[in-house]
Amino acid sequence: MGEEGFDSYYKTLYGGRWDGLKNALLKPAERQPLTAVKLPYLMDYASVLAARTLRLPARGNVFDACAAPGGKTLVLAAESGAGVQIIANEFSSERRRRLRNTLEQHLDDKTRNRIRVSGFDAAALAAKKSEHERFDSILLDAPCSSERHLLSNKKYLEKWTPARPRFLAKRQWSLLSAAFLLLKTGGSLVYATCALSFEENDNVAARLTAKYGARARLDPPDFLEGEKTAFGKIILPDTDGGIGPMYVARFTKQAVK
Image (cartoon, rainbow, N blue to C red; front, side):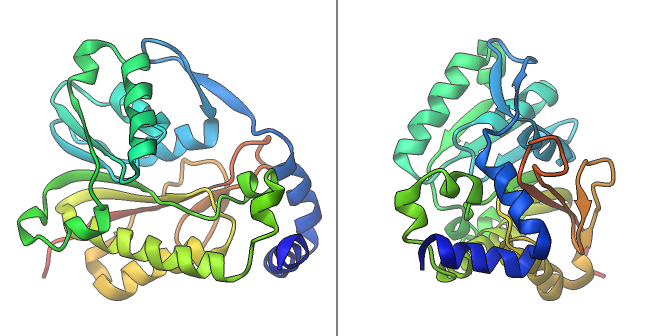
C-alpha cells in the first residue's frame, strides 16, 4: 500500500491531528545525553522515561527482555543498586553485538559485572515452568512498527501494509504474556513500544488484564509525561517537545486469591 495507505491508516487513528504529528515525526528526535554512566550516551529522552517507569527492587533480578541497542539497560544499571543483577536479553545476534558494545563503552567494570547479556527468545522462555516467577522486575520494550524510523526510510515505507501492526501485535502479545509468567508475584512489569497504533499499544495491554484478571493489576505511571490512554500513557513528539513516540503501560503481579 505504501505511503498513501500508511497515511490513510494513521489518519483514521489520529484524525485531523495526523498531519502535524507526521511532520513532527519527520524531524530528528530530540535526544539528550544520559550522563549517569562512564561515557555519556545520547538517546531519546522518552526512552529514558520509559525505563525509569519500572519499579526496581532493592535486591534481586531484573530482566530487560528486548534490550538492544542498550540505552534502557544503561538507565536500569545506573539507577539500580549493587544488589541488583540485570539480564539484558536480545534474540538477534547482530543487535546483541551492538548491545554488548554499548554496555562495554558506557559502564564501569563494577556496574558491567552486574549485567549478563543473553540471546534467547523471551517468549519461548516461559514454556519452561522452572523459569516462572524468576524475575523481580521486567522491562519489555517490544519490537514494534517504529513509525518514526519507517517514515525516514522510503524503501520500507513503500512496503508498508496494515498487516504490519497486526503481525507485530501478535508477537508483542506473546512476549508480554510470557513476561507476566516470568515475573515474581509482587513484581513490576513495564510494557513499552515506540509505536503509534492502538493495536500495538493499549490493545496488547488489554489482553493481559483480560487473560489474568486482577492478577495483572494496572499500576499507572502518573508521573510520566504524555497523554493518558486506557491502560497507560503515550508520549508524542507533536506535543511533548519532539521526544517519542513512546507508549508505556505498567503492571504489578498480584497473588492468586
